[in-house]
Length: 552
Image (spheres, helix red, strand yellow):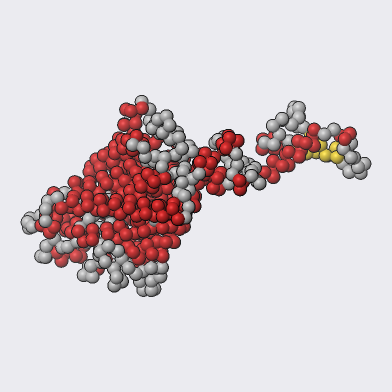
């Protein structure tokens, strides 16, 4: 290492020497200085590099405040995923998809507390490069609970996100009960690779992998799982009867709102992965915010351009996919890039998302929200871009300590391969077991045609095809006894009152049994009105009428 580097160059060089290799770059005076000013102390996932010689590895109150606040923001991404998916599917399934996102947090959070966190970051005697052991049913001592709970809470938000990715890819035909079981068990799909990438004993961590905020550990893992789940459950009924063109969105406005919530959550996702603001960490958190935004801008620009060029108009789905694809792409190395590099990485990621989605549909894979392209392929690009865009002088350190100028790129590619294989294989085993031994993972044809909202949750909507479907297919045997459900948004009690008033008006006064001492009530018309509308029973009619007494 030359001695004439300026302080700023040396600062950045020393910082990512540890991030890339897990070892000190050199053992001279600058090495001691580096130990005192290490700005990151981690290689991603919010998990600090536990080196007992470096005090920066402890979490202070300021760091904890930053991490917890970021995690609060990350949890809003569940709302974003739910709204995005609800906007992409037909309206008769939107409540069902939102409920699945709720299940991901409740059951996924429970199992992550029970065993997921321990398998990722347990440190007991049985821990090994493949998985951790210990810290099950997490309940640390009071002197350790600050750091332990902060890390657990942050990682929990990652775990639930990885599972939620699957729900969009199998929307509108996946059995709800089967999904509930899958959501609880799917924790194991995420927690094992998380340990490989972010725990000190993990074999990928030891090789020097970099995944700052989860391009591989969250998005590629979830994308590979989504791919296998979509293949196993099959396409929606009639999806490819006439063409492979995308189906109309149920509510583009809702989908855009969900995208904005994800955009907001992504800033917490990436910036929080600096895992603190002490020392120089706040500078890298600021850089991360800018690179995240720059990448999404680049992706949005390419998505809009491609959509306009292909369709001569702006398709909402293309713009959403391009922005989300660019966000996934920047996630892995969000604190490593310059603003120019972030813009370019986002543009490539947005292009991949927009162009790959129709190709996947042509291949016969029915993915209503584009999860495979956005999270899977863009997650792969995000990991490889770290090896491609890291500065030449940083690669010099990698060559010195790891052997080979393309070592980092190779490690990044290997990480993607093993995580994708693990995620796909375990997802296959879980879903096959559920389908064979517990309940079919696929809805029945009746359930799919009438919609999951009606079939699974007893929600009846107007003008979404439920009445037509039930008139053709009939009711399920268990629903024949009570086939009439109130229409969503109506007040059935008000409807009953209006129906009785309508019947009362149609009866003649002479037909009533009149008590001379009790006034008879009739419907009094407002000035200028000729009577109740034939469509009595609507809320507008009830607001325009009043009941007044009269003497017979």
